[in-house]
Image 1: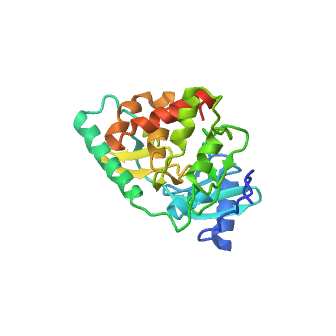
Image 2 (image 1 turned 90 degrees about the vertical axis):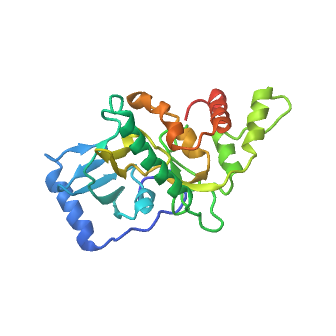
Image 3 (image 1 turned 120 degrees about the vertical axis):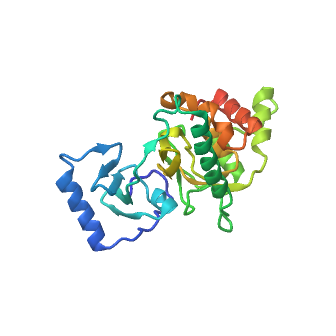
Length: 262
């Protein structure tokens, strides 16, 4: 089983058979002393790589239907390598025409994700209805949920705080906003320039789907706005690829004021 503090069920393996499983494990054992292992990804060949570790979860594979299995305390996801470069590299000096082409493609991809419909009865959950992960969630527990309703999700984000007339007006307003409903949409959860690969002016892939799942419509926008220092320039581009949601962004910033950043 993959290491997880959540009681949610573990998703089933994908394309798992004894040949795939043991050839992958054997290749890792043979290559790990000299092949690059960046983050949690090891290159097996020029075209194949494997992502594995105690904090890798099967839900990420389900987002793109990779080959995946668990062995011991680790989950292994075998993927085809995409040859491309992060668009964060060289973004600032890139021509405006080139930026516009890439952002238009990314906007179209985001719109296509929005058109996916969650299964009947789905709440805030990973692709298969299981627990969620986001390195920006507060607390020691890495995986949380799933949540039956948006309100349950928001209650978790504000650490269980309920409306009380003794709260200051800002906190009361936050809780009132959290009672709203947004449509659930398929969400990547980290549309950073560090997670988009391109060759020239052509986007060839989006990577790092561990945070993907069914979230309120605004979640893609507010998480994208949480840029890290490596791509601080990206904040200027987000409104060009996602529908601006200033009220929801202000709501999330207010939540962080009271409960800290993720």
